[in-house]
Amino acid sequence: MAAWGKRLAGVRGVLLDISGVLYDGGEDGGTPIPGSVEAVARLKRSQLKVRFCTNDSQKSRRELVGLLQRQGFDISEGEVTSPAPATSLILKERGLRPHLLIHDDAGEGFSYQNMNKAFRVLMDLEKPVLISLGKGRYYKETSGLMLDVGAYMKALEYACGIEAEVVGKPSPEYFQSALKEMGVEAHEAIMIGDDIVGDVGGAQRCGMRALQVRTGKFRPSDEQHPEVKADGYVDNLAEAVDLLLQHAIK
Amino acid sequence: MAAWGKRLAGVRGVLLDISGVLYDGGEDGGTPIPGSVEAVARLKRSQLKVRFCTNDSQKSRRELVGLLQRQGFDISEGEVTSPAPATSLILKERGLRPHLLIHDDAGEGFSYQNMNKAFRVLMDLEKPVLISLGKGRYYKETSGLMLDVGAYMKALEYACGIEAEVVGKPSPEYFQSALKEMGVEAHEAIMIGDDIVGDVGGAQRCGMRALQVRTGKFRPSDEQHPEVKADGYVDNLAEAVDLLLQHAIK
Image 1: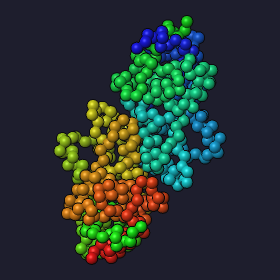
Image 2: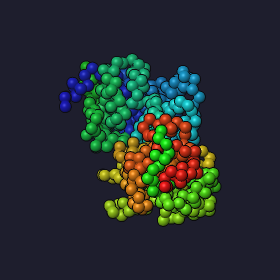
Image 3: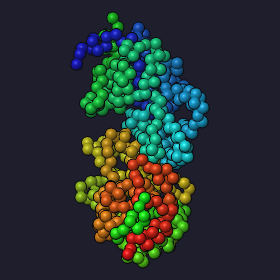
Image 4: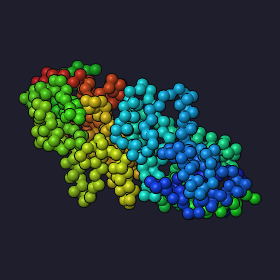
């Protein structure tokens, strides 16, 4: 693989995934990943532009940012791209009246009863529209791996014989809106995430570079993924920031 | 379409789906579909061989048969092919120790917690094996359409990046074991079901003929299904039996 200097040359903006990169969520609010609080602070003191790009839809942007601030992270609501506001815009533009599968508790909310209610709403429509906030397979909490929304999206797609529209990573529109908000072109940006498909593959398909961290839901087999190859694998965000500050900025 | 005489010529054995053909299930035990109790009785008095072929895994075979008998159906346990005994055999043959996703209540049992538990068991295995009892998209209860096991199978397949082994309709082994139990060749048998893909398509792929009833989960769009065309569509089991007794037996 090329030297880091070559791989990181010309990077002006950094997109950071939150869950599994900054912190691991959990019932108690979760815990920061060692070194990440300082890494974010160093990144923000540098010349690099920074934006947080998450699929988290369990909490509102305000709640998520509050939780991270209490853990010591330098982050504000305006710096976060999350799927809920984007979805809200789509609903308004198309004049859609949504049935919300889950409200407060994304985990427990995926009960048979709630899934069946959403299924029946879709089957009653002549042209059913299923919008999914992300399509992640799983994420990491302090207690272990957790089934993510993508699994439930697939269940409804199969039952109804339809295809969902995904808002959030890895949809190109979503990455592009984060780039626009940061004021950086795709070829000048790098994504840092723990999801080889959603973060790394998604960003690369948009013309960005991408690093995978060995934290969060990372599994060793990801480094041999049959379709996606990251521009680099790093132990954690702290290592990624070390490399960026050393090689991206001249 | 050819006349019924031609379409039903040479039929010696009849496979009957249960849910949506004999009765619609429900919290109160469900209700027989009008005319089906008499239709089963007439069929069993004829020269045709009869076997019941169901994917129902919510109840044990004994419970299901008891419920149907109380509704007036002439049916015994030995006449029913259901996926649980077949699965049990597979587990024994391969020496597998199963984690059961659900026990008693297939509906409510599909909680986020139970799904996540099964997901973690699979992710912890080096060679994960997921066995699904059927892969139906949905079925019909008296209260309306209900999400079926196939949707949850798809959710786990996607989350774990694996493919499930399906025991039950529409797997060919399953239809073939029902034919064997009936002592009839595929070309001499006809399946009667409410599921255009699982019942009709599955049976036809095994060389059988198949009728779809317009009861249970039948939807008018099934008659224009892009891939599966039944050998005939009938309003209900009673009409199917009328036709069989008139045309199949000479």
